[in-house]
Image (cartoon, rainbow over all chains, first blue to last red; front, top):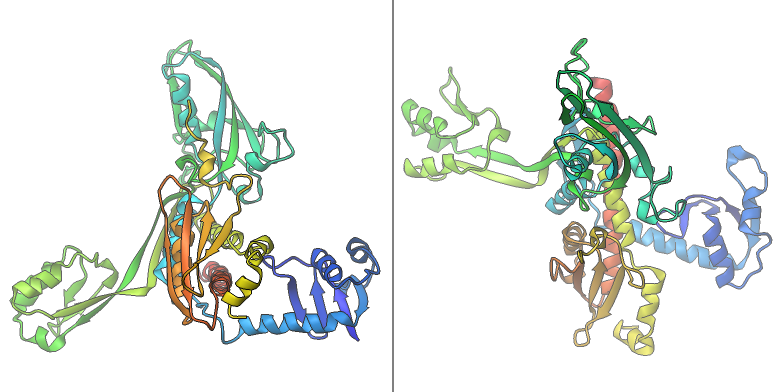
Length: 402
Length: 116
């Protein structure tokens, strides 16, 4: 008999068993239901009841239960899981090294992975990490020189602090509000009311927007090190002269850059292959100092330098190389092909991430990984896709070679 | 006026499956997977991951048309495997890689904030 310990644990990417520990099987309530239903075994209590039973919380044991039949099927699942864990896995183990990290900027090295992963990360950071941006504007009064649409568009482009975005709902799949997308789960309301009463032109800026949610506010670009700079007044929306007025209500919603660039959290995301530069020292020594200098100067960026003591050419900054091929062409023109060999390493990347301020650059990277994981999860073959295959019946089994 | 909704690019329409597949009628162990509302991001990482599997004889993806928001991934495997198995495994492996990447990045962030 097997002692079964049931935990209401998180499903690990739809896999049935969250964790298999020695002697105990940890499952979540829905899979428990599925197992007992499949084996036609009576459940001693509903999963919810089992979860509610009070047992020592320290051990995280919610319920204990016996099942003889389960033993074999469980062991089988366990074996299958182990099979894919060892030997049969082609997963890579990428390494990361952060070089620079600021709120809105990150530079890091990514090694031991494929360009496809680097590019997928870049694409996701630009177009699929959600943020919050103004999406609906109701204008009450607008006597400014800009028309309503112009102002609505400008409002949309103002970056809003979006730490909340990952846990927020898209208004299109929010069921709390009846489709109008104006509830607290999927939207944030802003108000703006400004009127110019003086002869001096009044700047209406993002600081004049009043948010219903203190965690979602226009991004503050002012330099924290600069003291008492009343100069910085946020992003200018419109300028008003005496008597002109702007009064509006705006709804900000969660969205992604693929929908509209205003939702993109990334200002720029780039990656470059790490260059590997090998100088052919023997060939280099056949050059005179004058020729060396000429060759070194042929590079538009400062990649090489001549050692003042030994007069040898050395690489000072390999990453300054822009894959422009100028030094290669120069070597060829000098009649010394193969003077230098430059390889773009396809498994090492140098990423630079600049954020708009909506989320921190480091968080942007982490969110991108999370989103990519979610996307992969969504494209798994589900139970019903397998059923669609079963319609082939014996023919299908035959074709599978079974 | 009759512009299609913008969200059509990334919301799977009702009654359509996110993933479906069709076996090749002439070649054994070959199948085409149609993935709705995905593009190069998923297509390319899947393809490259499938290439790491020695049982995969062919793996490729295409975006048939820029206004048809779907990709088609075609997989041909040896008899030791099947397209579905290879497909599932590539997703599992990518998932594991991203898990690792996430942990590595978080650990590095911690280290970085300590050091500087």
